Length: 281
Image (cartoon, rainbow, N blue to C red; front, side, top):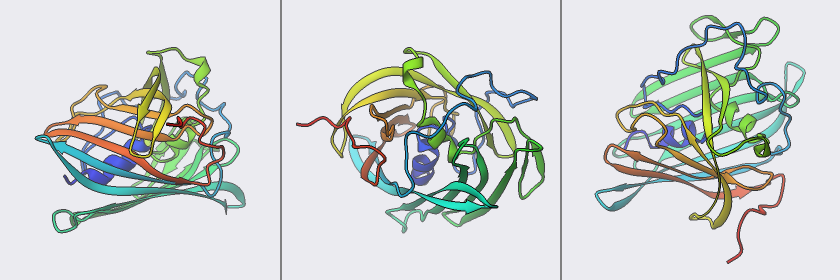
């Protein structure tokens, strides 16, 4: 189960990067951006942060069901701090993942993004991956004045409204769900693997579910997936986020080629609001 930690991080971004790929895999065939304009959506560029605070900590665990047997996979944590970057106030978000069974496949991944506190647009993205002996480090700096992204390998044009794979979740947590009806698509642009992709999540409405942490009223989504060695393509994955102002992902589920994978939120601290979506038993 070598993709357990990338599943948590890239899914959660976690449920909102809306584009998943296997380790060292490719990206969805949704068509690269050929600009100059951004995705035509009120979602792009107009959102302000009302969902999270500096100091927030979230923990997720992954499990598999294979041939009717439940297996544990790994854990990921997400921490948000308030810092300065080049004189600007930024949210510094760090996502770290580790495997439980290092004997079979050792994973130590770290993703970081620096997000403007006013616009929720990223200034910098860092990916430091160590997965079963495969190691890579990626650094991306976004320059709004020139609409460019500078990476380890070159400079790329990007639209004025852009997200990286980690900043996307915090941007998306601020969606005003009252503007959407079930089956509406919510599009935005993401910079990934040296290309810009116009992607989307499909909003499915409200649902009450029970997780390992508790019972919640939630908003339900289906992100677009790429077909890979573990996942089927299309909108097979389902994501649930709290139906309260925090909008944190509490469960992600998807069929995989050998069974099913589930990711559950197991711990949370320093949320901006009370977890009012949790249903008392």
